[in-house]
Length: 348
Image (cartoon, rainbow, N blue to C red; front, side):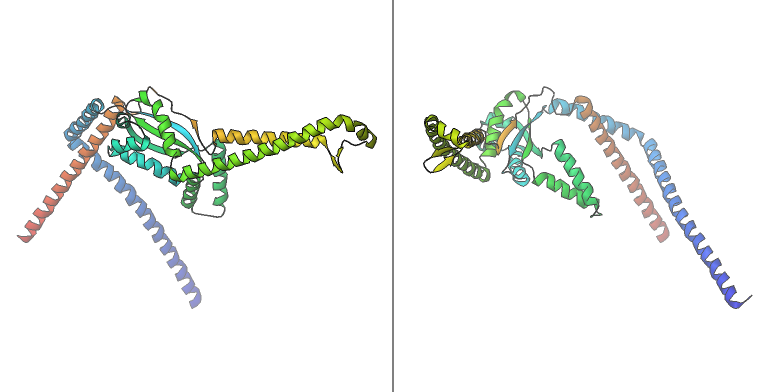
């Protein structure tokens, strides 16, 4: 056997040994993780059994605290209204709602009443505000299609989700405005003050004013145009009988006025088009679709606040969490005492 062949065989054996060691190390790694997880469960079980009294006491104490809070904290109700505001971006709406929420959370009812133009009694009934963009089913489908298209060019799905979420917020004009109140009897009276609050925002109100003036100018121009067309129609109707014979001879639908030929059908059609446009503009002036209340508050009888059972259950879970934190502190303190004793023993 040649020296080269021996070296190659030795190299192959070495590679096989290295691969075996690699797979063995990987197997041991996952085995240690699994054993560590099992030991953690065992320690958790032992700690639970050893300190079961602490766990039961704090769990029951937390439950009783939750039940007591249910009787102490007042119930509150939630409802929402839909507002369409073409001139309000998501950030502008967020800023407007955050102002109301901050005033409500800090209990500044005098300023809250002043901003909404309501009395302080109504302001004290307000618990909180929030908003979210209103997304229709068609828009959801479009956003999902856009997300799938972006996946073909961008690998980071988190970046895609952030972009789609930002697009959803910044390019919306319809919003759900949520309001939480302690007493829902006066909820309907709060609707108009809130609508006025969002409409009278300086940025929005200026643009609405300009838009309304432009619509009025267009409506006035159309009225003048229609008046001219009506005059022309009257002239056509008065002269139609006199010119009927000439029209029949020429074989044309045109009426000759002076040196020009006029098609009466086109005049009447143009008048209809202009009249429909005037109706549409007058409707926009009345409704102002760039800012309008789409759906008002609905008064729900069921409170939004957690029920007695739910609040007691959640408070019980908090009590259990506190109990396990105390158990961890006790175990840590024992470990520190053991370390201190070992150091003293070694020093002696």
